[in-house]
Length: 389
Image (cartoon, rainbow, N blue to C red; front, side):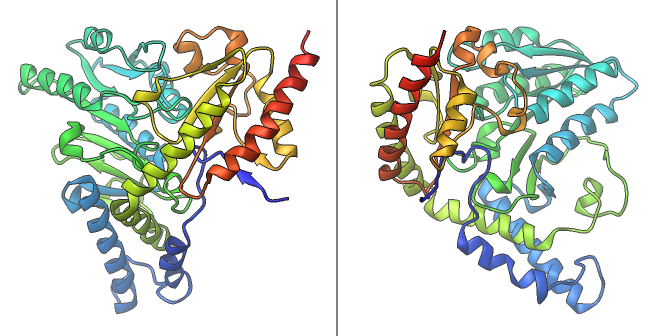
């Protein structure tokens, strides 16, 4: 039985060209890039060329790119690093109510340590209410963190406008307490414009494994002038922000994945959207469903749909028995039976939240797979609804 993988918002298949670019740095150019000898300098050169590639994609200086072990680490460095730099002050931070746990849980931990925290509300489509967000900013607000695109429902945020709001607050304050804008762009990099100058952001974080690159890799754009204290200690790698021996194969692979988006991103986006539109057309024929986003303002690869009287976990397990992989929400919270915090923030009732599944596509999917998926899904929904009390 050929397996069908529709959980690409959790992780993606590594592109063969990415893998090929990485291989020499495992067993040929394997030296520590921080060593002085020529073998080490050759590995360091690979890192710096990768940094150039990533910086070009984000339209920033090479020195503004920090390589990390992924977005969870990047988000923690960004949030904790800014707050640590201002540890003697009574400070306030804001994040959206639908952030990935890597941001939301970090912010909640900072609240336990005495930092004031507000969650910016979203509308029924999972889009942050800009007027409410603006109203939350106070004189002691030092950080606003809003994800570029949501990992569960695919809703895209008005990052440029939010960045503009923060920029106006900066100008108003002058040399007083700083305020920074951070965006988690993990789901956006494959499909949206990530020019950091257009986005008006101070910090942007991303992961390699969401863009057909390797796991355990990531990058952070850190605008020059942002005052951030390290939260890890060791050597002086990555400008003293992220110490530790660099993951050379991972960094090279990440840069290759970025390079492929630069050259093939538009055509891949068009292909994925066509598959998603076919999926929407077919799934809309099922009665008593809700599509949990505004399709005109969402990522082309994510479709979150709720089925009345059919548990999401049951749908997932029965599809898995048919060789089809989906999820019921964020991969980082799939072990929890609580209703999705994203859908709850959007105002969905528990009976709809518990019946939600997330189908997420990639460039490796096809329209034929949608036909196979829908055949299985129709049988499963009918069966579960007959069993429902």
